[in-house]
Length: 393
Image (cartoon, rainbow, N blue to C red; front, side):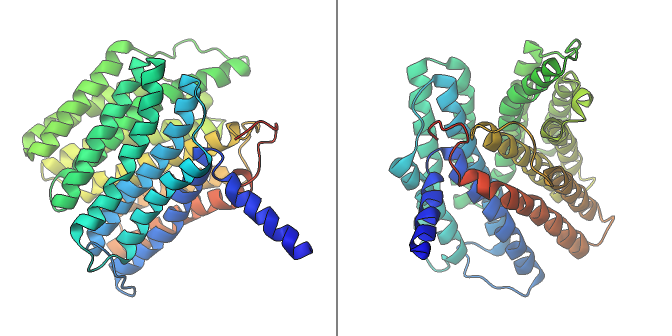
């Protein structure tokens, strides 16, 4: 009887993961982070051989730019869009089916050696349109024109994924990272200053001086669009010029949020620091386009520091708020936030040759695994349990 009760409890916990999109996708991206990174380190350094659908380097690029990012997009957007539009959440068997499409992509990429290229591409390209369709019809019903820019960026991201499968050695992966930065600037640019101002008000502190300037919002989109076109064109001087401008506009916008005022709250400083990796990566992109340093430097600045940091910060906060819990960071998670940024610094330093490449790869990988491993340890009980306030989801 005790064994049967344990099994029923496990079953309820597993099914609880499909009660709201953030649960299963946040768990999935963390598991992917913890297992895929050491696999890549082992593949890159030689002791591990996998029957990958693509050569190891391209497999790593796809999984960390598209698969990891897509899971974060699905978990956040399908959760947030229900709140934005006041519509019923995607859950149950529908959510299970969407997640299985994402999972099928991971399996075929890991063990798909010898399978037709069209099959590998088709399975992986099927996921993002499902997310766009789910979010899109809600946005259309609610007539929320403000959210169309998010769908537009996702559509372009899907085009870059298609281009990557057609020509993985082309500029499509770099363009996808530019779009990832654009998405971070749009969504992160909404939540970061607003969360910060709310926290300051709740603590009786002034929000004076914190500014959201509409002209800068449009300036970010315009400069990032120009950078995207330059990257796709492959014109080095154009890439350098547009990336420099985009970095300056982005940094000005971020500085106006006065992030240092919330430095005592880890759930907020993680967002501000992660956003600062965007202008840093753009300026590093400019330098690589000018031939001053390797392209891997800007790529890992944004992929590890920007994407890795912002995603870890957002999922840590959303998982608390949407399970009815107080926004109090579980023990050890501030260390996880520090670890992901140390991973980015280490990986960038290795790109510059400050430390040996193999050493940097190993240290950065270990720090990344520690960051997302801590998330798993602290958040699996949260993600698999019902809301503490008894509400559905």
